[in-house]
Amino acid sequence: MEKHWTLEQIPSLEGKIIIVTGGNSGLGYESVRAFAQKGARVVLACRNLEKGEKAKDEIFRSTSKGIIDVMKIDLMSLDSVRNFASAFKEKFERLDVLMNNAGIMATPNFKTSDGFEAQLGTNHLGHFALTGLLLNQLKASPGSRVVNVSSLAHNSGKMNFDDLMFEKGRKFKTMQAYGQSKLANLLFTYELQRYFEKNNINSISIAAHPGGSNTRLASHFEESGFMKMVSKIARGAMQSAAKGALPQIRAAVDPGVKGGEYYGPGGFMQVFGFPVLVKSNAASYNIEDAQNLWNVSAQLTGVNF
Image 1 (cartoon, rainbow, N blue to C red):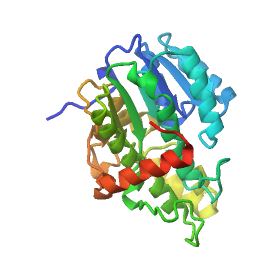
Image 2 (tube, rainbow, N blue to C red):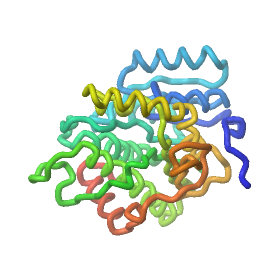
Image 3 (cartoon, rainbow, N blue to C red):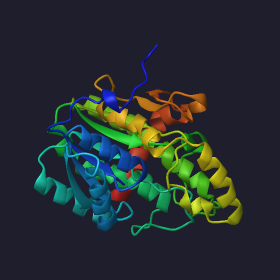
Image 4 (cartoon, helix red, strand yellow):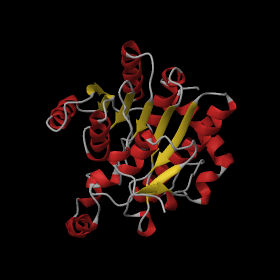
């Protein structure tokens, strides 16, 4: 039986360069902290630099290892994604791990600055563009990894390629939009792995999900009085952000991880527990949908791999 995988099993990360989007809070914060404690140079990428610097200070109260660079990125703006990528490339020639962690959940229906439905735009399209823009840095680091953070909500997701942005009469349902974005994360992960293999690129693409974790991701969902009450009860039963971050941390650093794998909690219905290799739903392995999503994403973002 596999031993429980914990932070103690992370190898030395000295000399490694890692980007974590949304690194100032929740799962991203815990990931940045774990990587820094093992000696990595971590780029904490976030929208709010002040919050990023505060997170950096908090992490360094508990460890003197590693280096943390706080850099601005807003995944709701392709201009911001491009500016981040340019700034990163000026500073670094290589990249060992790109952790596409940042996300929004259950938001009202609004658009990004580029006109995308906000959850698909933030959770998938922004990260698709970022990955493509940093491809040369990933290629320059043999054995590099891209880790996309998905969710159990992908199980309810459906790719509606005729109306991805809920603009053609389809009634907007916030969790339907979220599920679509999280299914997109997995389709992209598996297609990216096929891209690496086809082009003989020494990099791997992996996905992970946190199960039920006590973070602020669903804050929009909790604005009504009823949902606040339900949320308070649910949060009491959830695992911590530190435990929820273990699958994506394992995906990023465990030497035994292989491209195209998916990690999540090993307990009841993948909601709780230590990180193990899991399976996503059948829709996430649809190669035609994955290729379609790749092509549409390249067209929408203007980023070609």
